[in-house]
Image 1 (cartoon, rainbow, N blue to C red):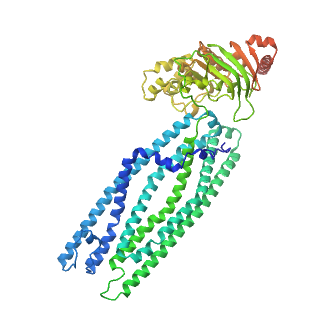
Image 2 (image 1 turned 30 degrees about the horizontal axis):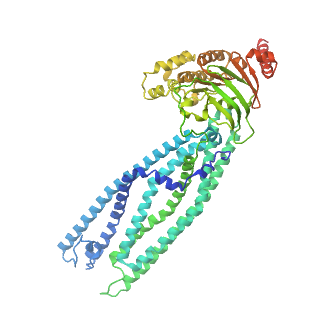
Image 3 (image 1 turned 30 degrees about the vertical axis):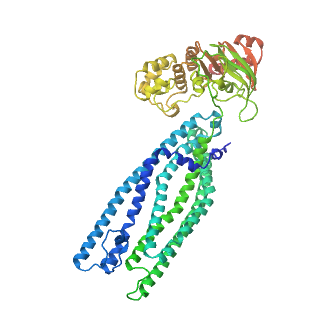
Length: 637
C-alpha cells in the first residue's frame, strides 16, 4: 500500500532485477546506431587530444630547435632530425597546421555524428518506455488506481521517464568521455614523462573510490527525495482539481499550509543532499589542485636543475602540454561526481518506472480466454462475497439471476453495496467467493476486452475527455472514434443519431461550434445534465448487451431528469440493464427491484410488490414521498 499522499514507495518493491539493466534492455533494438555513436564519440575525444601535442612539438622542434622526434614524428606524421633554416621551419610549421586542421575537422564531424546518434537513440528509448509504461498502466486493475493517486502516476510517466532520457542523453556520453579522455591522456603523459604521469594520475583511483562511496551514501537520500516529489505533485494535483471546493469553503490558508508542508519537506531533503554533494565536489577540486602544484614543482625543478646537454625529466614543450592535459584530465574526472549524482537520480526514477512495469494486474485472463460471437445479456450472481483489500465485506452471499433483456433496479442506503455489485460484471474487481456469470459462463473465463465491449456504464458524474462533443460521443465505438480522430466524417451520422436518441442533439446544435465544440477538461463547459446526456449517447453508440446506470439522474433537476429518463428508456430497450437509483421514481417501472442493505439482498420484487410488503423499500419510498411533499409545500408557501 502506498502512503496516503501518493508517494509510491511500494512501487519500487516490484522491480525485477537491477532497474538500470532493465533500462539498457530498451536500448537493445538500437544497438547499431548506438555503436556508431560510441565510435564517433571516441573519435571526438581522441581528436581533442591532438592540439596539445602540436603545441609541445612546436615549442620543442621549432622554437627551441630540439632534435627529439616526438610523438607525431614516431607516428610518421612529421620528419625527424633537427629543423634548421627558415624555409625548413616554415615547412615544418605548415605540416603542423595541416595536422591541426584535420584534427579539428575530424572533431567536428564525429561530434555531430555522436551527438545526433546518441541523443536520437535516447529519444527513441524514452518514447518506447513511456508507451510501454502507459500501456501497462492502462491494463492494471482498479484496485491499483484506488491505492495510487493521479499525481504520483503523472510523476512517473513524465518526470521519471524524462529523467531517464536525460541520463541516457548526457551521462552516457560523459562515461564515454571519461574512459576515452582519461585513457588517451594517461597514455600520452606516460610517453612524455612516466614519473610526472604517476603524480598526475594518482587522483584517478581516489576519485573513482570516492565516487563509489558517494553513490552508496546518496542513494537512499535520492530515493526519499523522489518519494517527496511524488507526494508534492499529488497534493498539487488534488488541490488544483478541487479548486472549486477550496474556493467555496474559503480554505485557501488550509491548503496553502498543506502545500507548504510538503514543499518544506522537499526543500529540507534537497538542501541536505545539496550540502554533501557540494562538499564532495569541493574535495575533488582541492585534490586536483594539489596535483597541479606537485606537477608544477617537480617538472619545473627538473627543467631548471638539469645541466645543459643532459636529458631532462621532461622537455619544455611536453611540460607545457602536461598542464593542458591536466585540465582536460580532471574536468571529466570531476564530472564523475555529477554523473554519480545523476545516476542515483536516474536509478531512483528507474526503480519507480520498472517497478510499475513489474506490477501485475490482479484481474487477469485465463490462458485460453472465451471470446463469444455475441452476448445475450443474462447475468447470474451466485453466493457472491467481496471486500476491498481484505477489509470488512462489502457484499455477502449475494445471489441474483437476471434474465436477458430484463431491467433490474438496485435500491438501498449509501454504502449498501449497489455500485460494487455491478462493478463485478465487467470484472473491474473479482469476487472473493462465489461467481458472476454472463450467459451461463463465469466472467473469469472471458476475454476481458470481448466482455467489456458488451457492457456500458453511465455514472453519476460521467467522465468526459477534453476534446469535441463528437469525439466524446464517438468514444463509444472504436471505428467511429478512429474516424473522428483523423478528421473523417463518414460516421458522423451515427454520432448524431446517438445524440438524438439521448435527447442531446438539440442542445449540441445550439453550442457555438455544434459537434465540434471543445467541452474543456472533464466537460467543464457543459452542465451536469448535458454531460449526462453525452454519456448516454456514448453508451448508445457502443450498442452494449448489458448497461449499468449508476445514479444517472441524482444530480439534475426534475425537468432534466425526465429527459434523461426518456433517453434511458430508449437505451435499455432490448438490453439487460442495471439501474442504481437514489430517486426511486427512476426504477419504479423496472422488471424487478432489488434492495440491498449492508451488503446483502433484503428484498426483491416489482415496485408494487415491494410497496405492498411494507419493508425496507416501502420505507424508503414513503420517506422520499414525504420529502417531496415537504419541498412542494415550502415552494407553494
